[in-house]
Length: 137
Image (tube, rainbow, N blue to C red):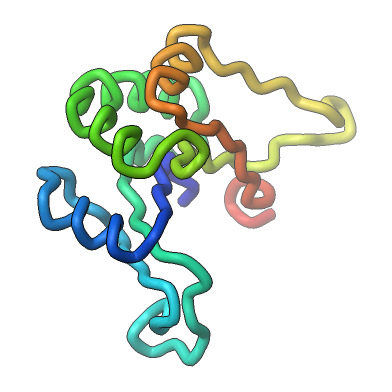
């Protein structure tokens, strides 16, 4: 289920300090040199956390609406992320299904100017991640 996730990363001390002060609830946290998951032998290459922004399963217009609401509704926390981590240390990752087909080999995806402007206020990068065809076809 591809969701929209806000990914934030930076120095371990900054991540720990920010997480101790924020009201945001990460869906994942990770620290450089520690296992990626409790059962993993693979170690994280950086420190950071992820925030669930939208559960709109691969639906870009709905994810964009949810992201705009999330950014505006958490403006103080977004400003705090920008202040603590700086530009280029956070990205909104829109999880999408690959809907290309023989008839539409290059589908178009549009991000609203309002979302781009709001993300820009906080130095957020925007990323589109594709997870294969819907339903695993």
